[in-house]
Length: 281
Image 1 (cartoon, one colour):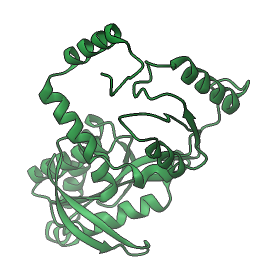
Image 2 (image 1 turned 180 degrees about the vertical axis):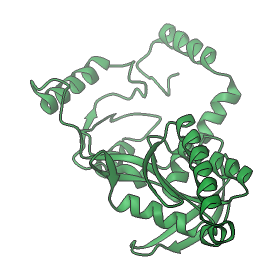
Image 3 (image 1 turned 45 degrees about the horizontal axis):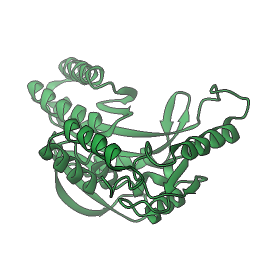
């Protein structure tokens, strides 16, 4: 405990050590630490536009203070507060100073406006695009009436999964769906469930996902993140759920497994993008 909270005396350290031992098994702690090692939030830091305070004790013996500075530098407009002391736990050491720093920050951000504020015009969201593989040929084979019935059954199945995984239907064009989620893991599991369920209809879909900052326009989302999601979907093979590296990094520790598909150029999007196919959701 001295490493985590050097300010604790022997009695206090024994209490905290007992608390930690009872909170999780050694195996659970090891799994938790492995999960933390896999998480990479760097790609999404520029998408954070909520007023942000990053507080870090200068002598933290677990996480170097440089990591706190890096985090604050990556978030637009974030304030970095370097506090004295070496305790890693925020509840030990001079926690009153930490509380005071937070109170001061909130006072400057909100003033006397309270917590009600205008609805943000930009949000961090996971977008999912799906479309039916070979839809034109299938429609020609079935004829208009039978194709319309099949398409209605397809839409019903997808909407059922959207309700199950709390996704939002934003647009439907022909046989394609454009949806959004507030969590990437649920979005992946929804896409996988869609790919599996439409097989009952003798159909295959391709699906693509990306997480990024989106503009809110008439209760829908737009912007470059949406375009990236659509381009990722175009790269998917029949029956495949394909995600950007941003999505993969954000779901580290979720149990979802991926196969690397390599780096590709997405039409109209700068740079190369590493894509991953969902192997197990």
